[in-house]
Amino acid sequence: MCQHQPSCPSADATDHDAARLVAYHPEQNWGLLCNGVIVFDDTGELLPDGRSIPAHRSQCAGAA
Image (cartoon, rainbow, N blue to C red; front, side, top):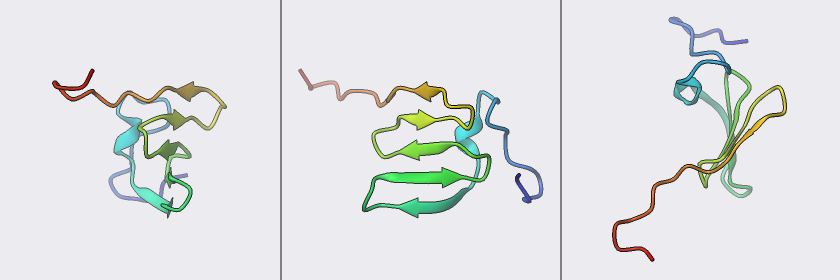
């Protein structure tokens, strides 16, 4: 799917979120990476095979 040189990480790679953003919809809070992964502004992800990765944003030290 990726046409970049060097190629971006595949959706199965551990660093899949390092792929280039090819579409972004800030009004809907999501973007599409060139490897087919959908990333959400809350840091959750939806993989091309339908698996989801929950948000993994770290909390601030002072947050309760």
